[in-house]
Length: 498
Image (cartoon, rainbow, N blue to C red; front, side, top):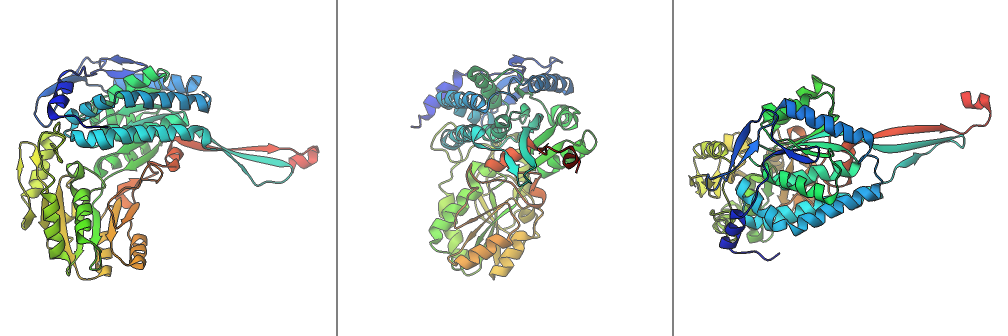
């Protein structure tokens, strides 16, 4: 898609009619309490809309309608090919409205319009389309059995699911979750992050236009205490899939244990290492990957390369190239397609990141922060025990740790409570494979920054993940349950008893 000018994007933003109500049972509605909360453009501070501030009463109503939809089979028992057709129609509608979705995403989150147009929206559409196409291609199984028996292993949708979203990739994470959940035949209750509600509401509108039955997709805006916890504790929700911080994710395990022992899938934080060894080829290319990994989406990315573990023999040369590439990651108006880094999502998060910058003792590059914007920053730390090397900052801050050997690099890479992603840059294929196998992380890339694609499972080890994976056919597992159907074919009554 050809990008527009800054003025053209601003014109689109000015003409938007933004959805503001909760979307429950196929219609927009105010919160039952009548309460609202304000959502603002983080780049300007300007008010965008007053959004329905839901609470446990709204969650109860949404779950009631989702359960009705699931039990009467309007979606769960629809022919797989028909479910696929509905989701494909949704993808077509998203494609027709892609520019509008991109502008809404940008003004609501502070993300750059460049990323929204070229990554977030097209990847969200691709994700939904991929899972839609998988619907009528995932087969049940027949297990090995004697001639007198047939044992079928079938997948069934798990039921009503709660989907709790982060604010850093609002539309894309929505697609990551509703894609496999709807493909499986579940009914869903979505809680968008309070900071970034708008694209979820707009997508729900498009889903109804595509023919998704009422009650199957419900969007319940509000805060974590008011909506997230009631979802986690609800006795009639069968599973919850959560993406967000590790601290919040752990609470959902408590909610489950104290309610109906619902299944919980968590995709949480990361402090991801990028290891650069002394034999890495083309340091300029390595620097470009490291910079992209650290500063893409303003570092508000659970898979960001926030720790650079670099061999002492190439450290200075690499840092020089990193500084060169980091200069190209300018901050500015998110609706200007030339801007590489927009505003952080909220004033509170901006202040949190600034608090970490105040602890930086050896700033190699950047370090400036003003009015919600933080420039690309590279900081050398004394070792892996430094706060900047251990905490997930979730901002554009790269912490540099010097090492003297491959074994030391692997040890430091694993010295973290997280295990989401990692990358290794080396020309030695044996070293690359040994390193990839040795690092406790759900995704390890070699000579690149990345997360895989829709065909590869995404999730973490240790305190980065629990219970399942997003993306790929494996994502369908968390929204289905297995049933064994054992059929006795014996003709003789005595044999049948045996």
